[in-house]
Length: 343
Image (cartoon, rainbow, N blue to C red; front, side, top):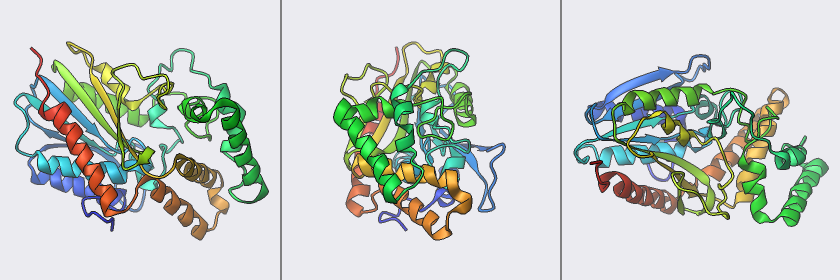
């Protein structure tokens, strides 16, 4: 059980708590089962809870679990905000809570979907020429090392350090990790077609956002930045050149572009810091190794890798959990409760 009981221990607990709360609050519900991914542990689904009338000027989407490893934090934030604002929405505002955008990744606790697609690199035009990433391709053998200990792991780490020394500390996040479309079993792989999660979220946004004049999305993430600090990444405006996310493309928030609005949608990613970035990256590298070698990995080692990944994306202390909730409430108040309605 996490330090703060608003947060759940795994996807199946989080999913049930989300559905139960939404039903208790009288919200309209839509359950969308994953069409192909099944597990004996329970249903794998994206769940939608709608709060407010159908015809509203301002529609707000709050999404969790775009990365399966980050649902623990995102789901708890959703439960907290749903409870706090069950009865006090601004007039003419509709809230659409989307839980576990990437349900397969949430169910098996990995960043990507069932096809190793990173959904936050997937909202691109697959009918045109896909982005290239020579920096990633040059470093792929080190990022996705053939071993996670011993000489091969140390050699891979040395290659990553050498790249950083030559290109600067920001180059690793800005260039190498911005997304790649050539190595299907690599990290930050954007795919070769629109994923089920991206397609389904676009359909949800089109359905519940139809007729709105204003629209906002608040997408919940963890893993980058100082521990407990919330960086509000406003994709609606051009990032500064030094921003770690300045070169990343294919954000899930761009699914909002399906709406015909009077002014561009507000697209926000809330990125909460956890542990040092090197630790986060190493945890993802080990998880990627586990995917590539699962058939031969001892269950004890697999469990250790997943626990290290969980610890890298969720800091299970009372203080960290409370800071997450406080900052999420502040952002929600600013962009939802005090927003000016369209004329």
